[in-house]
Length: 125
Image (cartoon, rainbow, N blue to C red; front, side, top):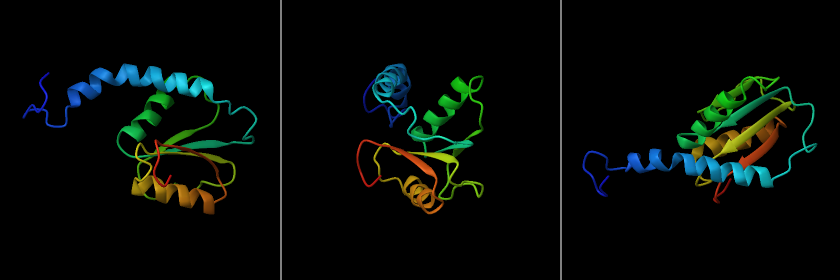
């Protein structure tokens, strides 16, 4: 596809085309991180993010649906579900690290004493 295509000004074609490479890179990064035994007694998982950051949660939920023994919920909102508590793992995801909704969810997760993992390339998150 052409750069600066008036039909695809955001170059979504390239984003979709590159998606498998991004998944492979994310898998490589994920395998290098050891989270075993850091958090225990988790009863549910919330992935808080917007746009592509939330889509990552959707993909993970679909890929893990037959393996997960606890509920996994994707939140695309400023607020977390009211059932989030200290037995919830909240994964806040924002590419920039400055997405308002993700930052709001992060702060709320702290107040609710949830277990938190933040994923970003920088920013306030």
